[in-house]
Image (cartoon, rainbow, N blue to C red; front, top):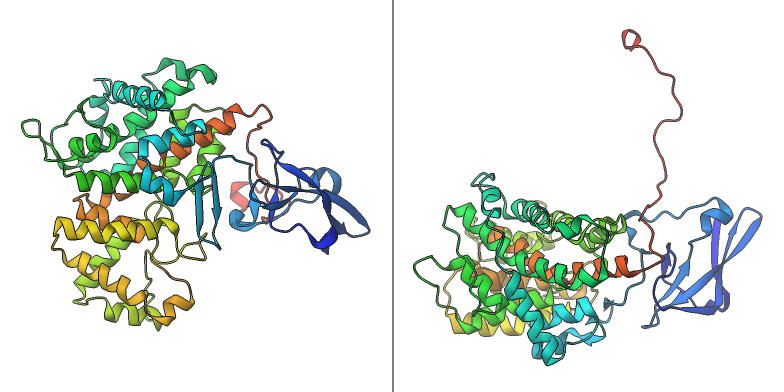
Length: 454
């Protein structure tokens, strides 16, 4: 039997299983683990927001034991200076800045600089960064031939991950070791080109001609231009639409050690280049339990409409657990309170729909679900509030972005966070390749049988 105790009852929380790489504080208290007849003391560390953890980096060396934490729900895989989340209090901060203040006063490009480089940019830094993004937004012409290899019905996420990796091949410097002096240029190239690749993938899926970016458009406006313009006719960009999409990207820019970000760090720990690491992040994001959640919201709404329901019968089935019905876009694994990003998007969603004067039966059903769930004690008691996926799905549909592109939008938004986490791994002189342990549960040693005896 294993028993753990914290001296003075002070430290509790996440178990940390790697060597500290950032500024942390060792506490005078310690955790004591007793196993059989032996006891060992484990250091207790505390982060800048008073998060406590038990450092078990030497546990196996001292006891022969490892920890078991299926899904890593209680395991800290790293220390990081980038994002802070308090799920119980509904707090999200990038580099110490509240998401509420950033969404009101900042832009996606400015926040991208903040996440990647650690501080809000000066006017000069922001202008140079924006100019660099413009410089790299056009793909190498040979890249167009790569798009031709995909079938017309290929999912945009499959194309995006492949093309990010392919795009890295056109930067020979990436084949060598990581060079901090060149990182700023490489990261800007990736951040700029991901939207071009995404737009080209979408156009390819519809058999439409490619639309090139324009230097006079800013980041988000250029993406919408490449998505919806024609070579002979530029789409009229509505300021409200550009602002709404920019805010969605900003709110998705980072979210601590989720599945895709952890994947990026895992791949980066093997010293893969930034394009390869980001391509792996796209693959991790693709799944319906992660980046595909906002797409699942729209699929749920379409199903409700197909059943001839306005949402009333569906919610009743959810509450009574009939037919395996699941309410998508409500609740969150991390936030046990209202998702702070959802609060921001809700306010702007209402304004945007009113300005665009959209008439859409799926949006009507979504608003019905929202209204009911925010009043029904069943959902309130279980803290099943609408989350960021719910509102971002509604907004993107109102903007005319097709459902299969929702996860791609997530990938564009999350790119600054992936780049920032990649940089943390690469800049850490003590970083080692990630190598989790396991508890083996297969057969014990067996004797090989010739094929005629099996």
